[in-house]
Every structure is written in structure tokens, then in C-alpha cells.
Image (cartoon, rainbow, N blue to C red):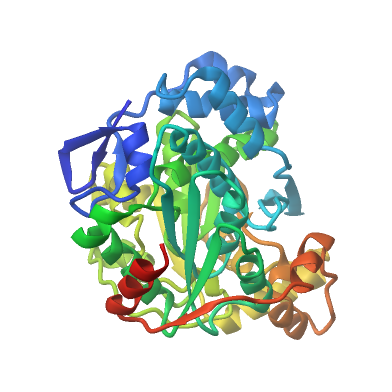
Length: 434
């Protein structure tokens, strides 16, 4: 399998280079040259397959023989060590809980897969691989914990000071070893811009082996397709078309779903739901893509003003606005609407939503109100509500318990490096500390 740049289809590399480079030299995102459709017998067997078995089949479909089958199986088995249950919240409305991994966020799937795949490629590298990652919350913790102690790798997390929850911050600022946290005086968009500038800087490229672990990396994207197959298999017996509502920031998660659909998974529709950072829902209404500075909200992991994965969405839908807008419905919600949804679901179903899952729930409800189709709706619950304890406690007016997996992080001391939001500061730091 070759992977091409979204900026130039003639620029093609193998899986190893796509994963290690992260971003293409022309600033494009890597996409598989073709997306093979999985055979009918795979879908016939889907309900009886284990999560790991279906993930291995999906990974092999995209990776081909670039990674030996036994090595790929080891990587998948390392990735799928926890469940992703589909929980009924209302009639024909379900939550896909993706927060049962070590950092209690959906990004554990992508980070664990990528860390092992990059670790596999690092064995043949003489030079240390430096992973730069910008985070608005959960990416940093998932990547840092996924790569912790992986030989031949070093992770540098850039995050906006004061704009992630305390628990999120503790999950990547307390680890030490091969993990460093840079606390940037700015927004997530500033952090993302700095990472992209580093990849394009000739001085840094000559001296260091840089790559990214954000959802711009194809190794993060592939495993984000796994749980769509798993969730579909859990509700297939209901006999209704399946719609996924995906709370979205950088749009890597919904891109993983589109990838699954391109491989043959019969997903009826997607709902792209955002907070007030509504660049993509606005595009779906106007056909005009207008990035702008992000606004801070209570669903902070989605505070993204220029979604990086949008070019991949266009590629997967053939740059066909009509097809894209027919398949994906977009909605945006305010913090007040998010709070109201969290209170409503707790009162009616005794289910605790986190602020991001609440936006997924709201988008699904709007879709169901507008469609005449009888569907099974699944919204993605992307992080455990305890990761946003201060916000959730205040909204629900009662304290939620902190799981032991999070308690251990809170007991550790934060270590971060303060940094300005200009590229010169980042470059100086990297040149002096790598």
C-alpha cells in the first residue's frame, strides 16, 4: 500500500515513511492510494468476531504486507486491551463508550496503535524519533502514556496554558522519562501551528527525526476506524440503518468512521457535531470553509478553529459537496445547550455525559428530529466525565467519583516548561534540549 499527499497525489510513500514523517513534505496529509473493500464474508462474521479479530482484519486491509502479520497482530492485541461498550441511553439511541482505556479517552486506541507501530519502525532507526504533539486535552495524555518508555522515541507535548482540565494536564505533565510537556501561552491552534512549522523548518529537519502523533498521522487514523465496526456489530441485529454522531474538533474521529464506510461498513449517515467552533457545520450549510481563531468552551478538546483532517474528509468523499452534505449532517451547540443536555440525560436516563459526549447526543437528537428514517443512533462518548470533574460536578450539582486510573495521576507533581506562542521560542528549545 502506498500513501499519497492530499496536496499532491503524485507524492507517494510507503507506510513506514508516512508514519515516521507524519506530515507530507508539501504540508499535505497522507491517505491510502486505495481503500480496499472488505469481503462479504467478513461482514457476515462480524457479530461473532472479537474486537481484536475485527481490528486485525481492518488493519491488514489497509496496511497490506508492509508489516508482517504476526507483528501487526501483536500491535493490534496491544491496542485492543479494553472494551468499547455500546450502552442504551434511550429508545434506539446508544452511547459508544470509548473511555475504558488507560487515560479514559477514545484517543487511547490511536495512541497505543501508533506507539507500537512507530516503535516497530524505530528498531531500524539509528536516530531517536522525536514525536511532536499539539493537544487541546486528551491527545496529549493518550499519546504520552502510549509512548511512555517506548525505546527510540521521545515525546514533546505542546498544550495551551490554562485551557485543559487539571486532570488532563496531570496525565501528561507528571510522567517524566521520555515525555516532556511544553505549556504554551496561547490557544490550541497556536500549538498546532507551532508543530506544523517545526515539520517544515529545514534546520530542524536536517538535525532531528521529527514526526507527529496528532490525528494528522495516518497511524492514528487507521485504529480510529476499528470501533465503528465493533459498534455496528453490537447493534446489527436490530435491523435498522445505523447513524453515528461524532463530537468533533480536529475531525480525525469522524474521518476514521468515513474510512470504515469506505471499506464497506454500511453506515447510513454521520452527524458532525461541534461546539461554537463550527467551521465544518458552517461549511456544510454554505459550501465555504472559513477557518478562524478558536473560542474556549467547556468542551475544550473540541476548541479547534482550523480542523486539520478536513482535507481527508474531502478526499474520502471525492471533493463532491453534494455527496458530502448528503452523508454528513452538521450541528453546533453552545455551552448552555451542552449543560442542559447533560442535566436532561442525567434526569431521564441516569446517564452521566461528559461535555463532549453531550454535544454528540445533542447532534443525534437533532438528526432524529429531522429525519423520517427509522434508524439506530449511536453517539460517541469520547472521554470519561471525571476527566472534566469540575465542570460536570457544577452542571449536575453533585460530585462524580474519580476512577482509580485517574486518581493515580492526581497524586503526582506537574512538570512543564513555559513557552511563548512564537515559533522562534519552540525552535530554540528544541535545539537546546534534543
